[in-house]
Length: 154
Image 1 (tube, rainbow, N blue to C red):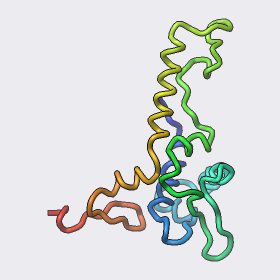
Image 2: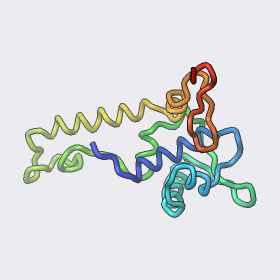
Image 3: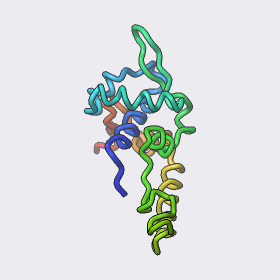
């Protein structure tokens, strides 16, 4: 499977929002600096994410973005599909016309793999990623780097 930069960056940016939910809107400039993603690229991604209602924006001074739904209701598959980056393993993109209008011998195998990958990513929410990334006793600073507490550092 090859996930494009667009899908990876969209997931990263959404995770940044999830990590900072409840602290006010997050600007694209903050995400750009913290995650090393071009501001213009983030603007394109957020237009797609906004159109699928995965984020909502607040204009004006102190504005920025919030998650469009609770983080436990947004799956990684939702994010990847929102930026039109679904990974399809079949040669025919699922049309079953790989071989002169007919499916190739391995079409079913690759189609099942595509479905498994989708199911895997659909079962993981942003809230799951936050929990996995932070673990017990960790805090997050503005750069989203887990900060170990004194017990974990020892």
